[in-house]
Amino acid sequence: MAHTDNQVLLGWVEDMVGLTKPDKVVWIDGSEEQLEELRKDGMATGEMVKLNQEKLPGCYYHRSAQNDVARVEDRTFICCHRKEDAGPTNNWMDPPAMYAKLLTIYNGCMKGRTMYVIPYSMGIVGSPFAKYGIEITDSIYVVLSMAIMTRVGNEVLDAIGPEGDFIRGLHSKAELDPEKRYIVQFPEDNTIMSVNSGYGGNVLLGKKCFALRMASCLGRDEDWMAEHMLILGIENPQGEVKYVCGAFPSACGKTNLAMLIPPELYREKGYKCWCVGDDIAWLRVGPDGRLWAVNPENGFFGVAPGTSEKSNPNALAATRKGTIFTNVVLKEDGTVWWEGLDKNPPRNALNWKGEPWDPESGEKGAHPNSRFTAPAKNCPCISDKFDDPNGVPISAIIFGGRRAKTAPLVYQSRSWDHGVFVGSAMASETTAAAAGQVGVVRRDPMAMLPFCGYNMADYWQHWLDMGKLIKDPPKIFNVNWFRTDDEGNFLWPGFGDNMRVLEWILGRCDGTADAVETAVGYEPRPQDINLEGSGVSEETLAEILSIDPELWKAEAAGIREFYGKFGDKIPAELTKELENLENNLK
Ligand code: GTP
Ligand code: SPV
Ligand code: MN
Image (spheres, rainbow, N blue to C red):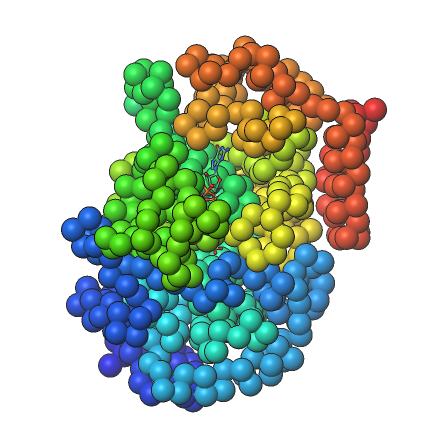
């Protein structure tokens, strides 16, 4: 049955069979016939609901357990031998203790169930950038989702070959018991273990567990970077395409920026945007001394609420076929709905919990972290470089987050090292993408707080070291689309209008845009951003660009306190940048 004679791989699968004791083992070969069989099986168990095939061909609906709707950061662990290597921002347990705990939970957990063995690739199979994994799971939803989000099947086993290495991933829904839910990375053993969850990021192990937590460790050891970043191509009227990466925390706008449609004014001139990736970038130094990015994924696991024909028509179009919708509203006609899709909440529909839903009840129909799992190829603005094994050269790195007051619309760092400081000092209001309180400001360096597989201070050092390896480094910026007025209304229109900020950013990269130096870095003057047709006045823009010294003094104090957690591991370059900021604010 197994299309491999890799003895290490076969031996590990056999061990996992011995541990979890499934009734049956099925190897995922990547064929459409097998996936179609699994969709039927999923419908028989109720795990998958077939949607209206005329309106949404190849689309299915899935509901997670009600206690299992987001990543669980408090139950996510980095298990390496030295606690210090996981650092103060990760949960840690000694590997033997964690293995002992997990083996008890996994023992016999697949009795009466089928085990699926999914060979998958992060990156283009056979390309030098690709890394391979095997995910074992007892969830059909996971198999079908992995087949959208990654490249799966026999070609991956061929690429691994008889001796090749791979990341081991064991997932079981087990009892979906939140008290026994664990998402565990063992970076020193190339192993991921996830149990008692059935929700996206906890169980689609190629994504955050592998492509960020494990890969960040590989990047540290092999001189590359695994980042929580979108990759966007911006084509000017001359047909030249420049690429940028953007790191924003979960549910802070990566998918939206990655699929941006420029305002009419720009489209008329001939500007176009192309999506290379919406969540994860693997970055390496190219032979030309520039930083090159690939998107290791093959699909989008996007936030549904707020996605509309107006806000993100490209994402919406991507979900019109071959997509799995999770925890959205299920309509009577077998289509789907969520808050922000349009102004017509459906009657006679079921909410994300599967209950009859009254749109007038004031209760939300879709879960705030409901999502779509859509093939990247469906996206109308997918880049022609999406499948290019070399990736794309990066001109700018853009950090950002949700800040009601402190951060200005955009500023540029003075240097690579200062840019690393800006990334390390990122903070953002929490969102529904993770279990826990929403809307509280927390520090989320490089949008990697929940995803860095090692000590964050060593990670910052790695960024500084990479800066020395890149001959022609990208310029580093910070943006904030979320400044509000005193009533809490967003001051900046965002979405397509973010093109206006991108234009300034690219202008800074090629030396054509003006800026003034402020306490935090280089900022545009209001007249440096094209506001034509935006409905934003220069006065409002001046307000969004303004820096309140008192808020920034508090910000600097917050950064100093955060740095304090890392003791003397903080790179001297960053402490120097912090002192510089403090002095500028005096
Ligand atoms: P993850 O998939 O969790 O990593 O999220 P993401 O960073 O891709 O976020 P996404 O683009 O899905 O956006 C999340 C939410 O932010 C949605 O509700 C959007 O409507 C909202 N959003 C995105 N861009 C903007 C913007 O420019 N302005 C405003 N006001 N809201 C935005
Ligand atoms: C995020 O939370 O950043 C996501 C969704 O992209 S998940 O895959 O659940 O992590
Ligand atoms: Mn994400």
